[in-house]
Length: 210
Image 1 (cartoon, one colour):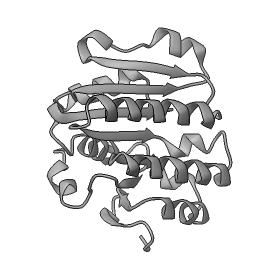
Image 2 (image 1 turned 135 degrees about the horizontal axis):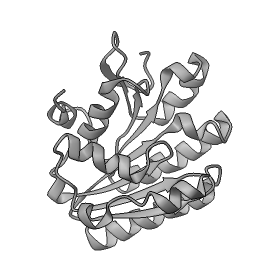
Image 3 (image 1 turned 90 degrees about the vertical axis):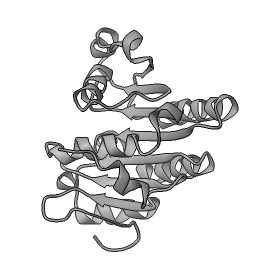
């Protein structure tokens, strides 16, 4: 399946946060993610990944599978309560030129927010000419550890933070794992919604109906 970065380049702009409604096992979840991560020239891109679901090794393997050129700088914040996985799955850092940082408390939003802020500030100070892209994988897993209200407050903070840094951010959420009421509470925090479900593939503004 081909990536659709060119399509997103006309609809997604610096400062936008995108909610990706993609079931976990649907192939378009992967291609949509990679397309949004490569929306700008990789040689002029700094990429931040916050992942609860895929280990760093898995994320790096996915990019290689599709022949995606690595970004100029890449940082993965790997959030996992499984210390064994964190200690044994560090990914192929030398080959991928990627920095991997571990967080061992999925519910600790303060530490996560601090790490995100510090990384964005570092890039803004040192490589401000590059486009920052962010992947948050995933809101569905985050909601296993915190309430919808807590998630809403966190999303409000980080989406505004990404906008301040002109970052292009996308957040994965499995629509089949949540009620429509939950989705309606989360949509307003995003500028755009990408719905990847088989019979509903389109982009719409977050405040409208899907």
